[in-house]
Image (cartoon, rainbow, N blue to C red; front, side):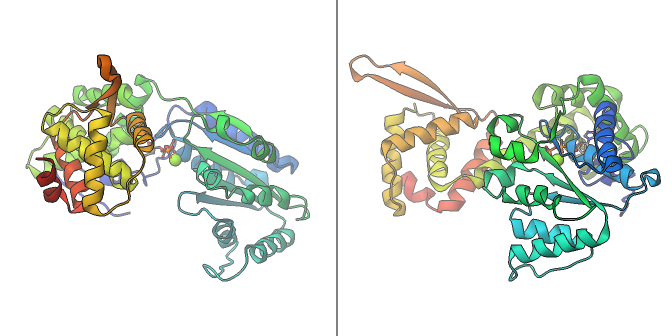
Length: 396
Ligand SMILES: Nc1ncnc2c1ncn2[C@@H]1O[C@H](COP(=O)(O)OP(=O)(O)OP(=O)(O)O)[C@@H](O)[C@H]1O
Ligand SMILES: [Mg+2]
C-alpha cells in the first residue's frame, strides 16, 4: 500500500474503507460466536450458514473478513479451507457468482458465453475432487434477493449433497435491519442460517475506534481530543456509522493540508461535515428516476423563490415542464405518490392544510438546511434537463 507523508497525514490509507485493521475493536462477542459456529461446522463436517445483519458502518464486513482470515490460517483445523468473498452489489447473477467462486480454485471462465449450469458442474466436480471446506461470503446479500437472483442460494446449499466429503457454508451479510422481515420464508429455510445481529456502537466504542484509526493515520498532535470527541458525538447522534466518522476526519485533514495548517481544527471538521452532507444529497439526487427529478427540481426552484408549495400548484407546473421537455406526463395520483416517496426519503416534509370550501391540500417544505445543497441540487437537476431557462420563462 502506498504511503503519503505530509504534515497532517502519516498514513492516510488508515482512514479509507479499504484499510483492514489488525483486529476489530469491541466486537469480541460477535467474533467469538461466528468463529465457534464455523469451527464447529468444519470439525464436524456439518455445514452451517450464518446471516449477519446490522446498520451500515457497524463492522460487519470487517468482522467477517477478520474471522475468515483467522480460520484460514488456523492449522489446528487441519482442513483444506477455501474462502470466497463476494460483494453482491457488484456480482449479482448466478453466472458471475459461480465464476467468482471458481476463481478461488484458480479456474477462470469467460465473462459470458457459457451456461451457468456448466459453471455449476465445474464447481461441483472440483469440490468433489478436492475434499475441501468452502466458505462463500455473500456481502450485501439483499441485492440478489431484491433482484430475484436468489436461485444461487439453493444452488450453493444443494451442492452439499453432491460433493463427496467437501462442504459449503454461506455467510450472508445485509445492512438492512428489516432484512429478515422482508426475506421470503422459502429463502430463509433454504439458507437456514444462524442469525447474528450487529448492534450499533455506543459513544465509548465509537470513540475508541476513531482514536485507534487516528493514531495510525495522523501525525502526533495534529488533532486534539476535544475535536475528536466532537466527531464521535456528531456521528453518534447522526448515524453511528464508523465510516462516516473516518470520512469526516480524512476530509477535514485534507482541508487543513490545503490551507497549510498544522492542525485539524473544529472549523475544519464542521466544514467537512457540511461538505459530506451536500455530497450525500448529490449522490441520491443523481440516482433518482426522471419524474422524481422533475418534481424535486420544481420543488427546489420554487422553494428557492419563496413560493408556497401545494400539490395542485406543483402538478400544474409539472404538466408545463413535461410539455416543454416533450416528456409524457404521469397522472396526478402518481405524482402525489412520488411526493410522498420524496417525503419518505427525507427531501421534503408535508403538512395537510384545510382550505375551507377548497378542501384539503398538502403544503410542502423543502428539508435542505444549507444553501449549498440547494444550489448543487439545482445544478445537477438542470444539468440533466438542460431546460432551466425555458422553464423559468414559462413560470415567470
Ligand atoms: N470494531 C471496529 N474496529 C475497527 N474498525 C472498525 C470497526 N467497525 C467498523 N470499523 C471500520 O469502519 C468502516 C466500516 O466498517 P464495515 O465496512 O465493516 O461496515 P459494515 O457494517 O460492513 O457497513 P455496510 O453495511 O455499509 O457495508 C471500516 O473502515 C472499518 O474498518
Ligand atoms: Mg459491509
